[in-house]
Length: 165
Image (cartoon, rainbow, N blue to C red; front, side, top):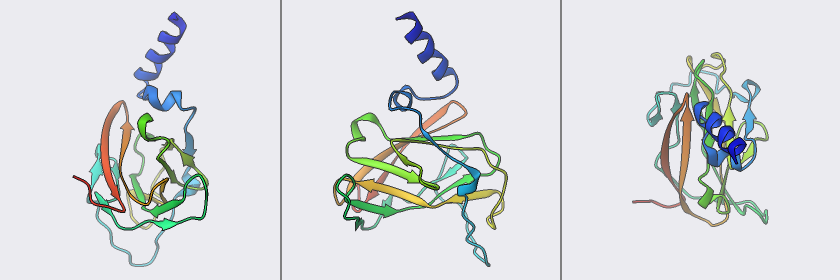
């Protein structure tokens, strides 16, 4: 019992939520997953969490059917992380893990993702964009996600396919 308490305490000191650890090790989204919109694309971060992660808007319109049994609905929603920041951990709360999964980067999908610290590598300057989004069991949901950066956490809600209070 003491060993379990010590491990959980060490994880908390490192800024890893216990819920993310208990779901297994999060997949790591590497710098190779950064996309580059290229061209004369202009962008300004609007909904920034913990000063580091520009997240999708509070309301994300309709989902699309995937034909998959486990996650029958999908909604694309990019994520943008400030370059050279501490790694970002994105987790789905335990009560939601049978209803939603997240996926950003190349093949990274699940209840928890760790986005590596990366130097600037896109036409967005100090921000690195990642393609991905939400996988859902139902056509629409009010999804909470927890973002953790350098030991600080914030939970943000997303209305995926519907508006939420």
